[in-house]
Image (cartoon, rainbow, N blue to C red; front, top):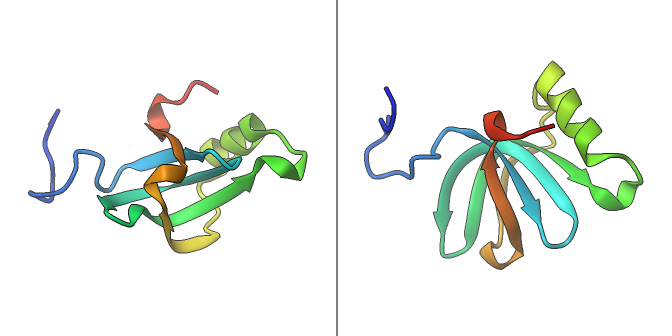
Length: 93
């Protein structure tokens, strides 16, 4: 069902696997839970640091192929640090 929110009162992204990029060079792939005054809350997220010298696109391709390697059961990213938030299935990698 397009536009259907399984949990009324939650964002349309609730429960959706998303790619969240931060202004500090971190990328997280995880299930979006909610945005609060504290930031964006993701569950079962994998993290990638652009300072690692590895490719973000390789990280995303590997995640698409093998699934999310959970590094963080829950992670809150402060709103002011969020550069972008995109559903994983809309990523062009």
